[in-house]
Image 1 (cartoon, rainbow, N blue to C red):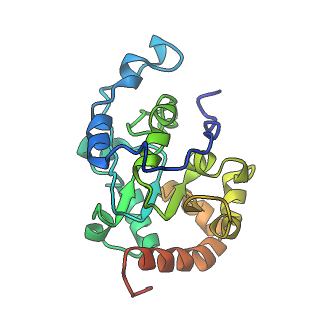
Image 2 (cartoon, rainbow, N blue to C red):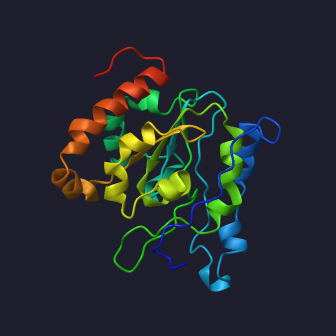
Length: 232
């Protein structure tokens, strides 16, 4: 698999009480992970170029999981997920303020790669590290069986959480959001979203249906799941 390709979707592993790891224990274990430094996929030449800093907010009560790609540099520096301009836009999409967004009783945040992967030659964020999802994703999902809605942000999260239901491109996958939200597939509902990066402003302008059709449903669904009654 090339570094720029999304990982193949994992076999569906539904959370079960029998093999779920408590979220506090799993969070601590993840925080100590150094697999991309010590046992990098593809050999030593592919090791993480800086000290790993896994960032994930797991929860035993949240009903909404934000499944992003991988932390950016500012998140790596602060240890706070979506603590950047992308997070500001995502909070606008959700219709919540920072305090609500970072309330771990309401939202779980677990990207496909827990560590900032670095930049490519053009200065863009590299894809999520290939070691992370095979090592952690199924365990993370089993630890949070109460999750009812997964916001799959970007192609990597969509590849894992939608599997064969994912379309050929990210745009086509998001265009089919009604199918995935209304799917009879077992497990939480999945709502595919583009990345809220400001680099995607052009995409949003070319696809006005996203703001007009998807965001109202997103805000209403999130409001219901976090126990709010205002759907603004």
